[in-house]
Every structure is written in structure tokens, then in C-alpha cells.
Length: 330
Length: 197
Image (cartoon, rainbow over all chains, first blue to last red; front, side):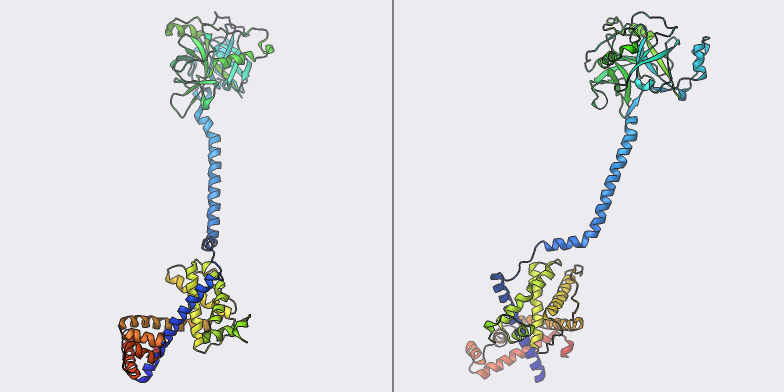
């Protein structure tokens, strides 16, 4: 171990001691300066801002994508809703005859010229309708006769009458027809059913007659809600099975009073059929301008004759007053 | 010019003051560049405590360079301090496993090569001093206190003789030498330094 080595090591030790002394001094300087408030206080928000600055481009892109996705989704959803929801959920119960193309034996046998109309050009749309008065006023749904060139009604016996459109109420989907001017039409006995404007109770047993096919079809159910589709207060919700063609048919309670007109059903749920309330119908009748009636009075029966009859008798009586409505369009 | 009336310190004044161990010069120097380094560290994901450590280490580099007497400043003192602090903080960040990315760009007139050399030297000394600290810890009493008193507290041989109860200063000197030899042996037992070979 030579002296040079020793001196070098001694110098290292001295340097070390100087370093230690200087460190202590620095610490003291720092503390005294800090105590005199001569050192600026570092901002605590800076690291956050630095992070923000570094990731800003990424965040901007992510935000842009998120916004675009959100709006695209909303737009798609809205357009889907607009184009499908109404059609899908709220199916109007009219029957498209061009699709069905049934042979109408009875009509073909009919020698009178009327049958030929249907042979040559079967109606495009069909629904049901029923007499308001024995003089030949009918009510049906507006969506059946909408855009019609001509409207024919066909009785249960197969007799066809030409109908005139008297009045429409698109808001409540009602249309008033008149067949009384057709020469083939003979006034019937007064209508057996009454029109009850009072609101019916939930759970009321109800039945309907209509033409989902060429024959008259009976269906029964119960009143399930006093409002219609999406809370529509002008309609009832009825648990009754209906099919295309039932539209415009009468909805009657147990005493044989008309309480509504079948209009539509909700396709997304089972057993939700909607019927326009009778008081809405009566309001619509009052709104018809006197000119349209051509001086014929339109007074409906407030009290029916079938109060105490059995269901079978009620149906037998009613059959003659419920018609199939056939519509021709271009 | 007396130090008490000095209002403006030039870089040279500060450096010579620092080399002489003037408290006023150190205090002035400390105040002058602290905000810059503090800002550098804090804006690059460091805390105020980190800023203090980095600044003090920077000043140590500067101090040891000045003490060695070979300090030849080719740029502004500010630029040098910034360059050193920036490199030290980068190293600290990579040691912590953080991405060594600073938003603060280096200054234009930075003497990059000089600073790199200085830092290499600093790193070598750092290793040496760390080894010295562990060796001193292993040394044991009374050698530890004796060397502390002589080299670090810089007591005179006479004071040490009295404190430790040696018969005379020569005796104390011999003791000191023995202790130093032991420390040296411990130091080199597991320390290899290319420069000392």
C-alpha cells in the first residue's frame, strides 16, 4: 500500500466530506429561503395539465368518434322508429283482397250485373261496416275507404250495394257511408242495437261481428283498458281476437249496445285490439254538415232491443246489419 | 466591492463565491435558478419535492465542478443549470419506469458534450460516495467518529487528542492512520473504479 494510494483515498474522503457539508448547506439555504417565502410555490395543477396536453390529440379523436357514433345511433334509431314502429305495432285491420284472391261463388252465381263488377275487378281492400240507421247509413273505418274510387258494401246474403261516402273523420279513423240511395236497397226493420255513449267499465264482456273473410265471423272478449294505443282516450283497448277485415266492425256489450268500432290492433303484443268509442262516433255524426246528408235524417238508436236476448239471438238479429265494405282504388 | 452592498451578481461573481464557500453567493444562486428548475420538473410530472432534489443535485454538480477549479463556462450559467437539471430529471424519470419524455425542449446554445462529460464525472463520484457512506457505516467505533471528526467536522488533531483521551497528538495521528487504512480496505473490498486502478 503506497503513499500515493493513501493520499488519493484521503482526497476522496475529503471530497466526500465536502459533498456532505455542501448538502447540509443547500438544505439550510433552501429552508431559510422557503421560510422567507422567496421560493415560488410550485403549482399543483401542472401535472394534470401536462397529462392533458400529452393525450389531447387522442382524446379529441375519441371524443369525435363517440359523438358521431351517438348521433348516428340516434338518427338510425329515429328513422327506424318512424318507418317501422307505427306500422308494426299498430296494424289496421283491413283486408287486402288483391292478395287473397278468393273465388266468390255466390257472386258468380249472381245473374245481376252487380256481381260482374267483382268478377272483373275484385276490390282491393275490404273491411267491415255496420248500419247506423235502417235508412241506410253505415259507419266504417276511414283507413278502409281512404283514397277510394268507389265503395261497395256487401250484405251477409251476398247482395252488393253501391255506397256513397258521406263524411270522414280521419283523426278518429271514422267514415260514414250511405247506401240508402241505391235502388236495390230496401229499408230494413229498425236496427236492433242501441248506441251507448256512456263509458263502459273495464271487464265488460264484449263481442264483435266482422268480415275477416267472405263469411261473417263472430268474436268475443272483454274490455281491458279505457284508453287506446299510447293512451288514446278516444278508444278502448279490448282483448278480443281480430284479423284483417275486422276493421269497422261493431263492438257490442252484453246488452247488445254498440260501445265502439274496431279499428286496429297492436301487433307487438297479444290480444290488444283497439276500438273507437261510441261517443266519439256520435260526436262525429253531429259534426256532419247538413248538406252531406241530403235532407235524410241521421238519428241513431239510443236504446237497443236485444237487452235480454241470448247471445245467439243477438247475433242472428245483427247479422243483417253488418256489411262487408269493399273498396276500389287505382 | 463588499458583499453586503452587492446588488447585481454576475455569473462569475456567483461562481467564485460558490467556490469560496460564500453563503450569500450560494443563497443568491439558489434563488436565481430555483423557479426555472422547479417549473421544469413540476410541468413534467414531478412534485415540488422532486424539484428540490433535482435542483440541489444540479447545484452539487456545479459546486464540485467549480471546486475542482477547472470550470470554464462556455455558455450562460442559466443554460448550464437548465441542461444539467433536465438530464438529471430525465434519468430520474427513467429510473422510476416512467416514459422519459419531456415537454420542455433543451435550450439552443446548450454545450451538450461538456454537460455529458460533467454528468459522467458526477455519476462516477456518486458511486464513489455511496460506497464511502457504506464503508463508513461498516467501519465501527471509535474509528468512525474519529474520521468523522477529522475529515468531516474538521476538528484539529489537538481537539481530537483531547476528545478521545490519547496521550499526545502523534498517538492520535497513528490511530487516525490505522482507521483510514481500515476504511480503505473496506472501501476497495467490493469497489472497482476504472479511474483508480
